Image (tube, rainbow over all chains, first blue to last red; front, side):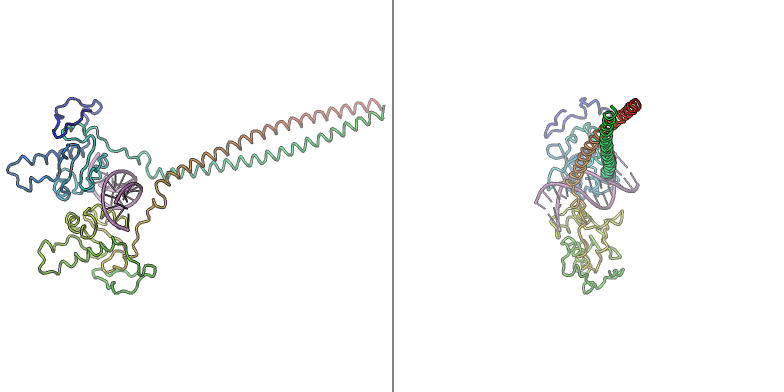
Length: 204
Length: 204
DNA sequence: GGTTCTAGAACC
DNA sequence: GGTTCTAGAACC
């Protein structure tokens, strides 16, 4: 990936180095709008006739152009958000930033960054995706179900163990009985043999 | 619990109906401050010398006195929050409200309610507790450990099952061997008997 | 996919 | 216990 030139808007709009996989793909509307919003705000400087308050930048790219800063959250929420989104709720805006993997990069300012959200690189927006909702791969009800499965498996194992132990006990008993039978047979055999020999001896 | 009188501040401050379990207990600072903040805002009406903007209510009890409304989140955050808390972050304030079990009760307004947060019933604040953090009873690392325990138990069960199955197989084999021995004995016995009878018959 | 409400978790 | 950042989940 070409690295953005610090302090200078890159000629990205005319770049042809477009990733094949994202060529022709529209970026998510949220990202386009946020990018638009920054570009529009950037243009405020130009207007000679603009009043001081209108020229005050509410939001802007940061100095490196690799992130942006909401300087006035109140004005941003009340004036800018409704122009681009269906609400004027700062929290909702931040929720979306998090959904797309932006990070807040300063503790005292509302500054956010994303590696593929760079001034002059609008085409990179198409490569930003919503965070894999881990809950869609493993949502809460599945976690519960996971616990449930654990218990179920435990119960099943317990049943299997008990059946095996029962069978085992029976086999042992049968084994003992058979061993007793054999002992009995041995006794009988011995007696028979004795008897036979006695008979034979006497008769001979 | 005494139910608050709608549309009329109750004489709670002088009430002696204090729950024994919470008597003398300080309410959480967050709740006291939020209550204070509403009371202070209420007093604005009085001041004759107060300018229009100073009299504008940024936040107030709702009409029933069973909740409150932040009318101007921006001013509330920038002006009021820092007076009472260590920040001017509306989200942080809301996070706290949620921690103490407040609910947002209107979709288009920042109105919040809690059954024990009522105008005129400051003593009820002491009965509000932080939500049981389910993760403190069952935190993430325990969940992981829970999964681990599940796997461990499964492995143990599997080992037990395999040992039992092995023992079982041996018992079956022994049983078969014993049954064969018995069959053999029976044959011998029969032959011995035949032999005996033949011998006896011939000799007699 | 966007918006809203609430909670988890780390850090203070 | 408070503050911050981020995520879960329901609803639209």
